[in-house]
Image 1 (cartoon, rainbow, N blue to C red):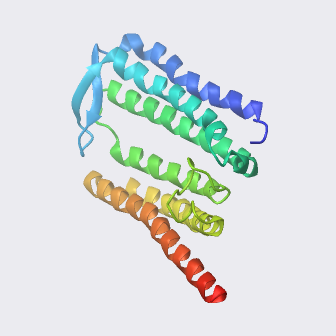
Image 2 (cartoon, one colour):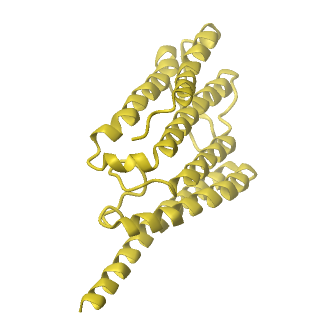
Length: 224
């Protein structure tokens, strides 16, 4: 993998640190138990201790950081990371930014005694998918990142075509759905998000199988 951009890595660590700073600021303002689970209407239906709610996700974000940081070193195809090292670092940054942002958003909303703003939460999640899709087209064959199906992992051409298609689907669908979901009722927003994400995931998977069959069929005809 290419040398890590230390300025970008420092930004990631700042993002990891911010939720802890935020937790310290709001600690005394929160009750001993706070909402940690919500129903389809955004109403809390389960509670946890303040320490659990304010420290678990920020701590998990740090654990995820180390997992993602060391993945290229244990991947049998680690040489391929050199071709998309910058994009991989951007993907890591996006993941940590999304987790930190959602933690602050949910905590701030619920600490004010308001229901979770589900539409805004789902729209942010879909925009996260869109931003990931923007980098997906640059990802090269590996065992941990991207659309990993038996067919993409078996053929580099299938991997490339699948990620080009998948990246476009995630990017454009994520943006369009994020706008639509923001203005729907909460129940409709949840349904549209679930169906949209399902299609965003399944279409590239099915395409990878069809493309693999096509390439193999053409190869057999040529060899025959």
